[in-house]
Image 1 (cartoon, rainbow, N blue to C red):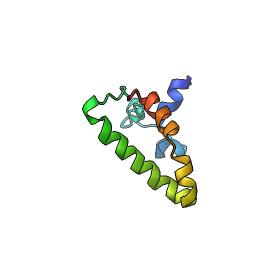
Image 2 (cartoon, rainbow, N blue to C red):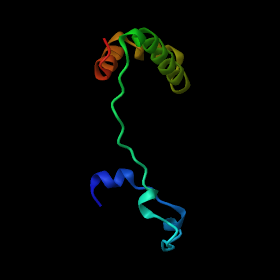
Image 3 (cartoon, helix red, strand yellow):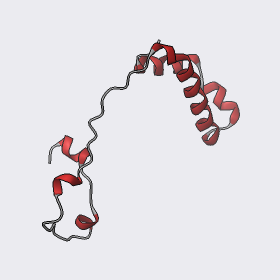
Image 4 (tube, helix red, strand yellow):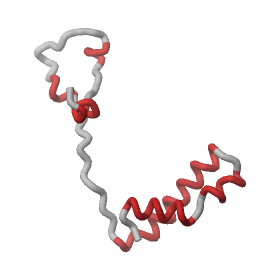
Length: 89
């Protein structure tokens, strides 16, 4: 099994239970295709996306770290790195 096939592998109940595939099971149709196309965002939507992302990250952090720490984590440099990786200016 190659590395790419590993990520596409879907273990079915039939395989998990150790049964053999019958004629009605098409083994090729049991794979999950994860070849995703790159996401592109129009520049018009950058501001709304940035605000949404900031809100979601804040909500997540408030659940796992103390409130005082959230403001320290949410720095401009953090978001600049994220935007750079996403190709957003």
